[in-house]
Picture 1 (cartoon, helix red, strand yellow):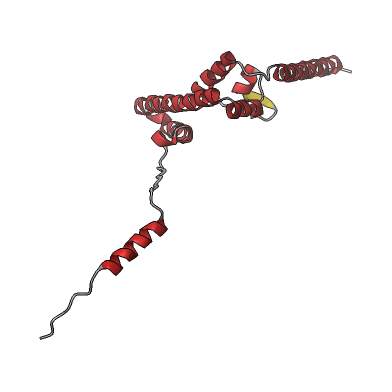
Picture 2 (picture 1 turned 45 degrees about the vertical axis):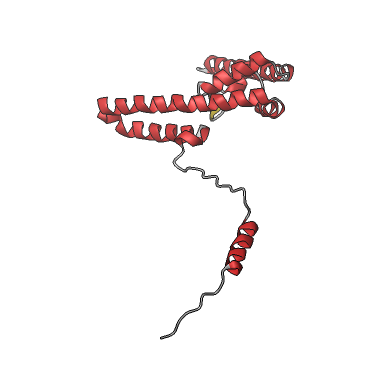
Length: 182
């Protein structure tokens, strides 16, 4: 039958690719299990990737990985990174600072996109969508600087009951004033 050798080659090639993908996944799991101990060098590498704007998890399109995340690049699970942040205050601070730095880098990219829209008006819609996503991401990573909603934290040293007692005491201390009638 014509075409049979081609089909067979395609099936064999697909089987080899599936095996290599499974081997890569098993290798990633092995690395993840082996690298569960925190080191300052690994923490610095993670913080640098976060500062560059790399997400923790992979970006997948269907079953394919479109963009490798921090976890895949360093061979550590996201839950492990979160656990390290709880256990190590220096690492948690480094990650927080990396997120703030990444928000500034996103703001710089927004300026570049604005210039692109001015130079090439045909790209204005794509630039607007990209800009909105970058603004949102910067606001999430650094709400103090880039969020449209400002968090107001109002605290007072005195509680409301104490203020009420003081106001009542002022009212009681006031002497009635005699009013002259005409």
